[in-house]
Image (tube, rainbow, N blue to C red; front, side, top):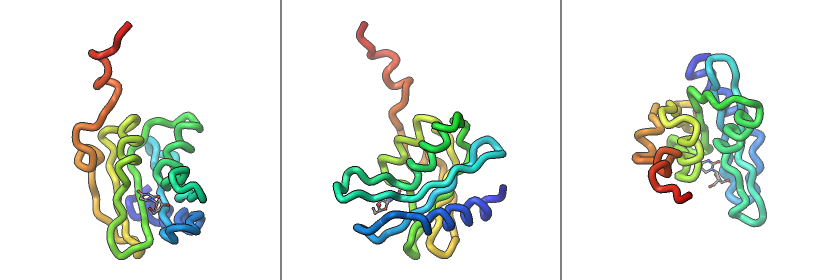
Length: 135
Ligand code: THU
C-alpha cells in the first residue's frame, strides 16, 4: 500500500460522507500493520455535537475489528487546502498511535505529511495518569 493509494481510498470514502449540515465531506483511510485498511467518512447529526469525524470512524472500525496497530492515516477533505485532523481526533488517535504518520490531503489528492507527535504536542496518554491515581 503506497501513500498515494491510501490517499485515494480516503478520497473514495469521502464520497460516502453524510454531511447535510456543513456540506464539507471528509474521508479517512487508516492502514494497520501493513495489511489492513479501515476507511471512514464524517457522519453528521441534527444535534451537531453528535457528529463523528471521518478519522474517528476509521479508527473505531479498526479497534472494533481487533486492530490497534495504526501505522499510516490519510485524511482528505473537500477544500483546496490540506485537511488536518481536528483536535479531538488527534487526541483519539494518540491513545493508540502516538507516533502515527498522517497524510493530510486536499480535494485533488495532493497531500502533505505530518507526524501525530507534531500535530499534537504533549498529548495526554495513560502514562500521564500513572503517577496521580488515588487508590
Ligand atoms: N471533520 C472531519 O471529519 N474530520 C476532521 O478532522 C475535520 C472535520 C468533519 C466534521 C464535520 O462533519 C465537518 O467536517 C465540518 O467540520
